[in-house]
Length: 270
Length: 270
Image (cartoon, rainbow over all chains, first blue to last red):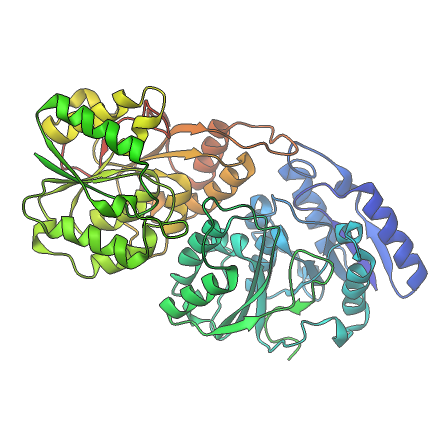
């Protein structure tokens, strides 16, 4: 199993790369190729759009690559999503694409294009407290489809998105079909009023309203709401589900943390 | 001219109410009725959804009210927009509805429903440095359609929105038709990466792509982007306009500040 790491959003930290390399060397069941593009820096991004796009295209077109692992989130994958999808090489199929957070823009478009997409921990997560376990969980899924890596209550077909990413891809060319899907969402570093506003937007979508249900992962590092919002994130999501006729399926074991579990998109692993 | 003030989003400060009352008393060309709901507080909001909705319905149904002036922004008008639109009284027509920022959710839906909507300063703006001029500008428009209050390069039909509000109303039942319209946008208290992401979302909309052009108001209180984003807000908006085939019409004289000008929606003042 040959796993290529590219960074379509922000720059991968060298420390994280070294730690993940060491972890993979110890396992001896896979080979990791960290593309040098991961360490580029251009303002906010891991290199200019052209550099990030070229690296992504390169690993997608490489028949020797079995899985593409997004290095980390941040912001920027949406800026190259349309271009990479306009020109998909045949060898892009048959690979697994894993990541979460900002990588959701690519994952949405890739899933729509019929590629095999999986929500799961990323190399940069190794720097979190408990991060080795997160990265090991991701690799266990990539290398041997270890079902203990999966979100424990998962029912296929499913998809998982960061809520803000989901909101920003609605109405764009990369919006996938949510009909009949368990839609798992999570959030990080937002005020509760923003989460409420984003839920208004997301649950107004006719497409999202076709989901079988919405399940809520962790909402972490909630920024101060002044004045206090009065209800918590679960009540917010429940309220908007009720208003829009979407079933609220309770909590899910995903989030921007080391405990984040794996969610294969769609029905491919049913 | 009888002007009713209600607060569909956050609580109006008492100081602001007193200063605007004094200003109106001095003018002697209009009467101001500040609804007691403006001073309610329920968590984030100026009263619970039901209280804000009831006050808004009351002034919209009152035939003695000539203009409804939204007290301030913040967040929350989207939570009552659908309900108030489901049940519009006849006397809601023939009034002017003025405000900006979070009031944009109501303004979008009201404009779509055929009501007379105007972007402009709000009572709470009186607390800004130079705020008396802002409030006077709003009143000059409401009371005597003073054209010096208007955004100086305005070409009808036009609309104006806070960018984040615009993004969050796309795909909802309150989304108006942007075909042929000059769409003025502005932003406050966001990081540049968020503005870039929101522009991706907004300019992907087939409806927004029918706009005659996009013009960019002020982007103020920009939060720190780590690392620095490399391009500024005007370059961001220009890039996304170019990518999506929308004409970029340059800067506009609106924003979350005391210089904010008046933008009547649509063609009613052509």
